[in-house]
Length: 221
Image 1 (cartoon, rainbow, N blue to C red):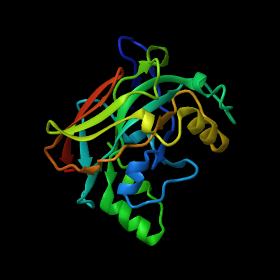
Image 2 (cartoon, helix red, strand yellow):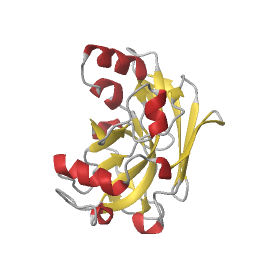
Image 3 (spheres, one colour):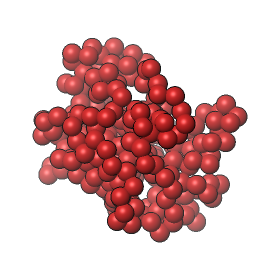
Image 4 (cartoon, helix red, strand yellow):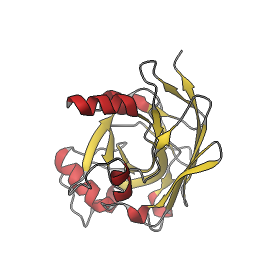
């Protein structure tokens, strides 16, 4: 079990469900040749997908196309259902930077057949995650630079102000479908620049005023 950790604290939390937003940066939707959504697009990863900093993302044997997607991640601190826009931010307990690692070839095949994305998004090690910074320490989560480097070369760079849906809107929508509980995580979507990661690559994700995360890409034995 991977426990959620906080910067500068002994505090830990057990992870709950992992809720992810797709196409939440318009330029990413366009690069994927997908429509910019009118409402949040959500999918799930299991908690077993989590990977701590310094870990190895293992590409399953049935895939030959792993892609990186850097994201701001929210930690939910209390239970909520049908959360209002006005109260939504009070449910965020912390912020981290994470990676939504995606088996793009598996996802493309699932899309072509009209099947779910679960395998391409939820395989073991598909959700690397940094320690969390307390929500109170982040003055404006909608004004943070976010970036991803592969072997030191910048691949993704944007700012959270470019998210299509603000955090309040995300949480109001998500909580109309799923009851949010302490330990739940929300991956808030990736900016443009997603691309392939090969065995041996070193990925470094950074979120301004929050922290960084480094992982290595490997193959499942």
